[in-house]
Length: 264
Image (cartoon, rainbow, N blue to C red; front, top):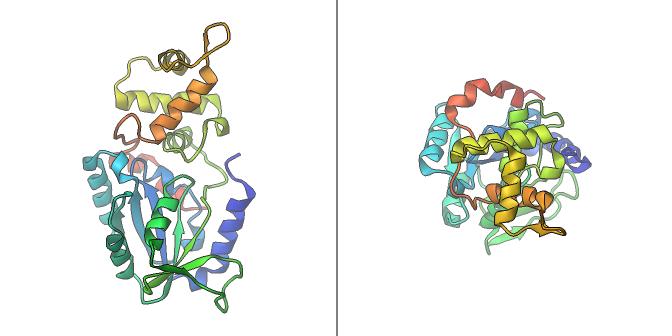
């Protein structure tokens, strides 16, 4: 189940406060920027937005640059982000996009690195903002360096993910977990990874069995613990333990039906 109630609630809240939003920060995973834009953009479509390519340290630098140029060719403002980026750099970038004390909403799919990004913004010079007249109660806003105010949101996803490749890529970057997807998606995700990693064996079951034995994941009777190995394998990919990878390229954009990503 990848669309729990809190996602629907977050979408409703964004809709309710849309008139108060001055800037939307879309946090995308640099390894799969189109796939990680798979959330409802309807509430934010008319709003000024900027793109932050997160986890850029987990992707090849040449591919990150190509994605940055891809979005900029559509007149989108792009910032390349990773955990080691100086706080002042990202604060300055956002401050240039919005008037002083403007309201900013940060959106993104689960596990796209929003906590890292938000914590970077907060630093040691942020402060919680009290109740703001005219804005839904209970929202946690914080002020950044007295320049702008930020609202974090829960991870968002579309309620219907129509493409096996889309779901597979969300699995590879960790936005979905192994127990959330059917077997055909696991197999497809492995095929995408195997092509990039130049692995000849494209049968997931046999590969996971070998992976389990190599990692010493053995259960009673000397059999490989394939379930544990499967989870460990995909977690290792999403965490960047197998090196810098990219799961889609700008050349694939036209085949991705990107208009549908922003249609619901």
